[in-house]
Length: 114
Ligand SMILES: [Zn+2]
Image 1 (tube, rainbow, N blue to C red):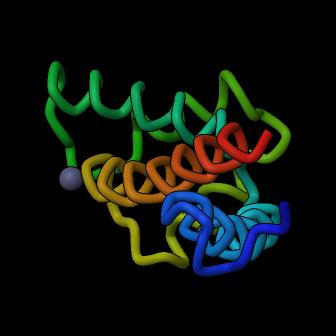
Image 2: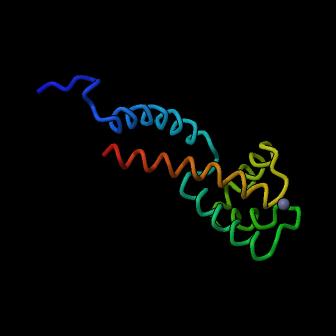
Image 3: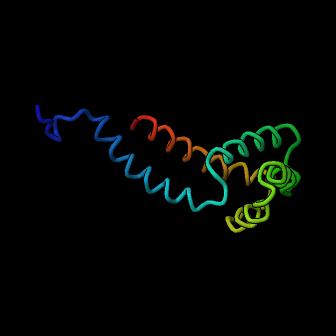
């Protein structure tokens, strides 16, 4: 039986639309100097760090994470964050949370598509 477009369940139509957006998002994410998984880990690190030690109005916690996890690209990522208007660890937390949740949605949409 051939399914007509208006016979398709809503979630299927939605996931196709999301998938197209996810592809665009995917391409955009690939232009970022840090991948989605590492971004989520940076977010967890900053969440813990800012909660426990507070923000010193510098990027000490962000810098330390990058030094440990992405030493070769540390400068590139720091410069990129500064270009996004990030001036301290709590700014960085807000920013990467937003990006990480986009990356997370993207992964979820990809899993649904399999
Ligand atoms: Zn701050």
